[in-house]
Image (cartoon, rainbow, N blue to C red):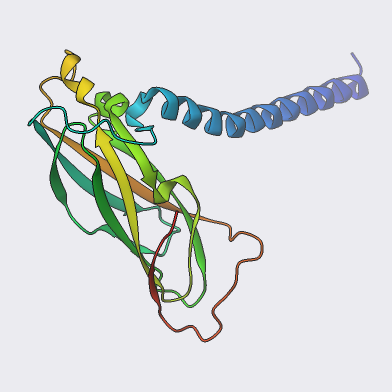
Length: 198
């Protein structure tokens, strides 16, 4: 094989490999929302399910829910739970709050990723409403209180894998995201407080 033919073969191989890399990268990004949807439907990986209403307390049995918060490295917000833990009857609606503060001099958008531990609790931890369902935007210096409404499905006690679980931890991590188009900026930069409305 001549040198030019070998160079052409090498070039074609390089282009094919580069093309495969681009396709695989695209598939990985497409897989993320599909995986999240799968987790939300099945409770896999400690992802809580969603519902419109709670069934109501069906017994006097309670479970302890702990709350955890963190931010990824690029997110400048100060984010934490208002309460560290609560005791809630199985099947009864619980309401907890987190606070987020934007200490910067510009608006910052963020999206929360969540899970519960132990992971096997995922199918029984059900959210009714949550700040994590939508992107949040905080103006410069703004502090907001963000609610999450949830319940623990009483069926948790009929599952041999979870019947002895006495406590669960709900965790959120906020990631910085691009500001949505049309975001209004408070020009005076004064701090404000408010509550996120979902």
